[in-house]
Image (cartoon, rainbow, N blue to C red; front, top):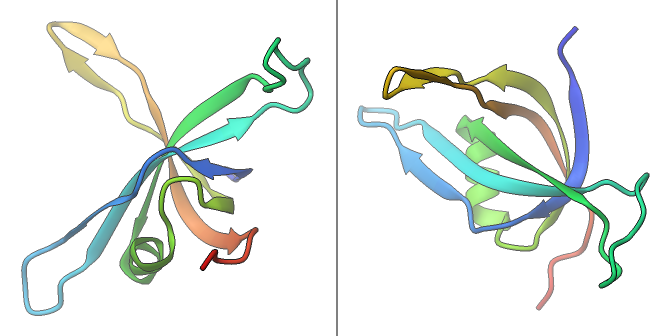
Length: 110
């Protein structure tokens, strides 16, 4: 089973692109900060934070485009995907989260 559930905030406005064709498909990508509240806070009172790259397609990507911006707090459920490739003859390893569901954790500010 491949399932991940994280709560955090967008670190940037999402980047959304649409495919060409008669029925364009939306593709949203954004970075997501997740504080590790099981660890001690630093001298500024912040928890250590993990950062994840997240992506969504179709209707979910359109929702992200319309309702998400830097700082938006979300609960994301998805699958962890490998994004491994070679650069300058060296293997580069990375992971991304393919979003399955999104839940907004704060009301929209005016």
